[in-house]
Image (cartoon, rainbow, N blue to C red; front, top):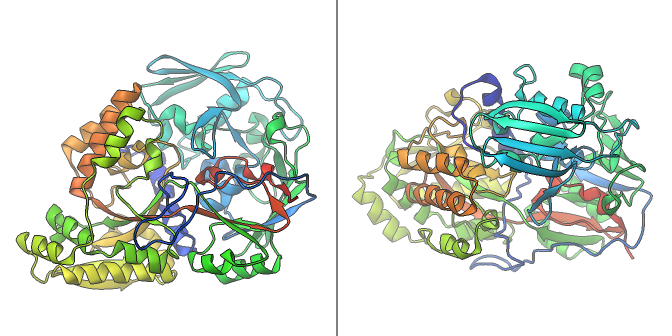
Length: 556
């Protein structure tokens, strides 16, 4: 997410939701951390794995397929959907002005084109002839009503932050919408390829009111599938929308049934038995099992997530950057990948994945990736550095929760590293509910020095992460502050020029990796399992916003 300095209620709610989703991912034993955008590969201690851009194309249509999902959404209202369960459903039902593609590029969608005539003006030409699921036609008024919801404090949208620089959203032609900004913002347009750019029928929004997106009301959008039915506690069904405007993404399946299966073992058994046809976010401890099954195929795809240890207390021994560096060097991150992530992953070189730099000028991208400081596993050197900083048996509290074996392995590795550099770690194990409050309530972080998060981005831009660490940002959990870092982030936000934007982002990254307000642990690819009946999906973190289910059909 981008920088956050405002303290308005709706702005704070946006930050809260992002944090909640990070905690819920851990709680569900479903960690999808990032690959570095390569076509495959591994580092020492990692198992060989291959990134698949696309599974074999469907040979034809299929009547229906079932899909496992780890939790039931609380709502499918796009203004409150910032977690894996609601977003992977909505991606197939509702559409945004732009589209985030599986290769992490952005392209026109409900906006057939757009221009940026001034640094503070974005003009969108709305695609004609698009129909909502109730048969009515998309207009500029629908776009205005949908975007304005994110500005309304009464809505308290979780996506308010991307709209923080928006002054107005207006219809400026029969099929034209103009967004005026208070100041230049290089990320605003990019976010319109994710949930912030979602378009719903203005009439439906007005009619449904606060019931919009619930099991009884559902939604009325323009995607390849329409809302079918929602049986609370069991499943949610989507039906193919035959009047969908885009022939290239017309659904190949007549129906998709999302089955809510909270238990990881139950999900894996359902894959094996054929009870469900597929699912995202495969538990890492089942990788080897599913690689050898005859029931289907396990695939890995692009991701934008990094597993991090958040430094929540800068007043204790971790307030010294040398101690943070020492701790990172003492953590056996390769061992964590092997034992906790099923061997599928890579030690993280920074707080963002390499593929977030894909839109940077080619001449500078490689240099940026090579200039990062290295923190190789070296307990002896780490202990010496910590001693130099005055470490001598001080206590550090590491918060954790009995969420899954992966979380336990990470926590133990961090505690061992703390001991190795002369600290006295105390593991504070709390319930999943209390662990979630670490992301939302500063009081809950009192006395906590470190806690784990899995942080993903929703746009292809490192600024989505580094903006979260600016002074005053809601997600800057340790209240870290560095004027030079803040200046670099501000410059990146204001810079539309790719060269200047990249240079400012790179400066922010250099400072963050030198000072380590968060400790990057590892990245891991998106995982998806497809049963032997179906194929066609493009494995990518973009499944949170891209209509992936439309491409699934019968296997040849």
